[in-house]
Length: 122
Image (tube, rainbow, N blue to C red):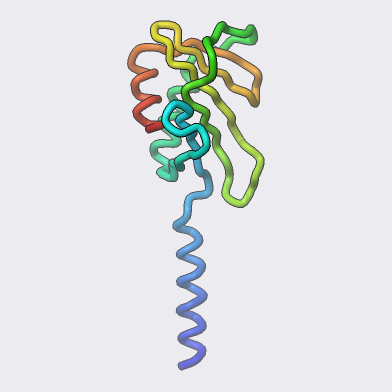
């Protein structure tokens, strides 16, 4: 009986760990509360954000921004403190700007992609 209990506990620990996401996106809404952040653990939402960012027309030259960013968001792998991605977003339609700090590139974002991104970050 003791072996069965040990086996059950081991299986529970393995399946419990597997259910946790391997990636987490952390989001700081710098207008609402600049000292705290929320987490996005749903892989579907993280993929949707990645798809939006992948479609932008990225540039190597710096784009103008006004003041501090409205959002800062980054992707981390579970158990690793280094950021896989790191973005800042300035909301200033029609010229909202996003910066990719990892690849040192800039893009304008507007319209439906901007609305979808902000909805996902909230």
